[in-house]
Amino acid sequence: MEPKRRIFLSAVTSEFGQTRAALANHLKRQGFDPTWQQEFFDHANADSLQSMLRDLVDNSDAVI
Image (cartoon, rainbow, N blue to C red; front, side, top):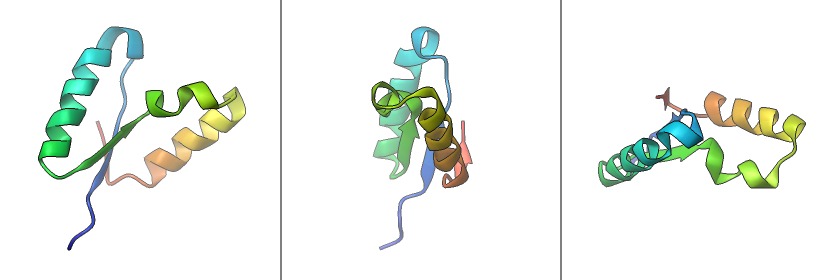
């Protein structure tokens, strides 16, 4: 079985949260592994958040 392609979804949470959620659901149904900042935002300080975001983007196959 081929691993799922990871796609990082970048969007302003307050303005595009619903759109990002709809896109994530669509991508999941298509067999992708979407991820975004809000999934871990509440558990990080500013320095660790920047590092986590960099790692997520670097380890993604695509960024939307």
